[in-house]
Image (cartoon, rainbow, N blue to C red; front, side, top):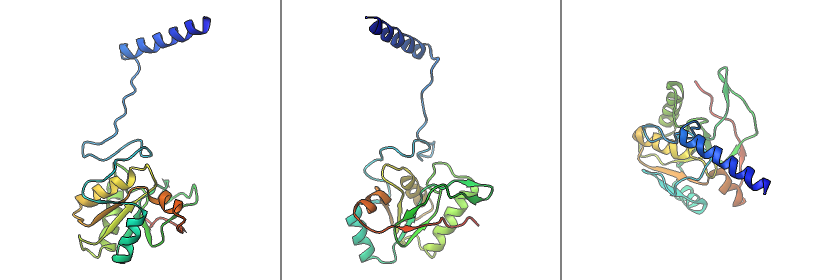
Length: 183
């Protein structure tokens, strides 16, 4: 009985605080431009606008049919004092270019320039060059990167929604990776 009374009192206190506005739990998930800016590791939508969503079998077919397709890993890597900090071993799909931190919802000029420069370089300036963006499963970074590439004028975009995790679960090889250096 004491336990029930204590729980009731605790719930009443929490409800009172919430009603009084003393507890603010609202988290902004998207920027005004529509990029995901928080809770990057959470369930993602089934598709990304302006891109074809791929599963592992579809990605393998695409790579076989269009061998010039560029895989772009956007997994995050800590950046401190002008260099990437290797806080964990990272491996990605063979043939990938790792453009770390470019899937964040908000990019500084430096990171936007890094993204823009490397996309232009790998696509040879062709907006229709096939580009596949990915991260891990339940990760919004690839979704953001697709949106950002579209805004830069790229038109042949793909999102490998479940990324590294799906590739690994399919028993396919991953290779140790390092992010492309920031110029």
